[in-house]
Image (tube, rainbow, N blue to C red):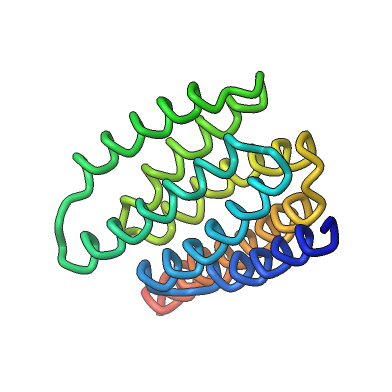
Amino acid sequence: MDVLVQCIGGLGILASLISFQCKKHSSILRFRTFNEILFAFQYLMLGAYTGGAMNIIGCVRNILFSKQVAKGKRTTAATVVFSIIFVIFGILTWQGAKSVLIIVAKVLSTVAYGNKNTTVVRSIIFVTSMSWLIYNYSVFSIAGVVCEAITLISLVVGIVRLDIMPRIANKKAAAL
């Protein structure tokens, strides 16, 4: 059973790695949804109910935000509603101080994923990924720890490749 639990997390790692290398908001959220559903199963199997509940709600949030952003609609109301839902479920599934990490991470990721600017998404998710790294360590999710370490590396690569390098190239082109 332990091997199965960690394998599910391994598939989540793959989805996470791919997500932050995507240029389009919808692609980022599609792969983040795959990541969250896989880790929701893993957390539930580990008895980490806060992480499981938060990731299930996160999947719904990601699908809704992807549709709203694609249609050019504002996500402000949904951001507030999902943030409240995350706080409520965090309290209902309370497992001590580690639950605070996930409540804060999910509220911040809700703000990030509701933003169509992928630079903002990657920047905020860097902070939330640090919270998940600590949470995963505390619930003994080996795949979760590995996933967040890889996600942090993927985020840095994505930020440099997709956010910083194009700005440098544009400044050089404008100077010519």
